[in-house]
Length: 130
Image (tube, rainbow, N blue to C red):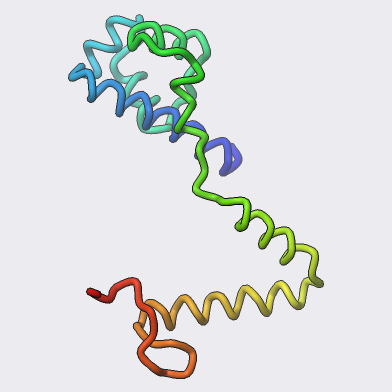
């Protein structure tokens, strides 16, 4: 299964688990209510098993949710339009330039995590306690 599909299955499973726990249901209780085995529900929540539409609709009915509400934050991405533009700009460059940018970003990230900038001076660090 491609990585993107695996991630989608895990996101859906994680959302089901979150909703189940918010409603203080055990896997056995929810599985019984929707007519699946507890072990299958466990595998769905872990992203090891794809949730069928039929099962998803039973879960949505149990939680009194619409499909739009369920997927509202599942598909939400932390990528901004500026991020998309930057990626498009980079992809428009020749492959050698793209490689150079990747290497530079890796270098800057490593330096940032170390707490110094490229010149070796104290820089902006995500680990700093300011």
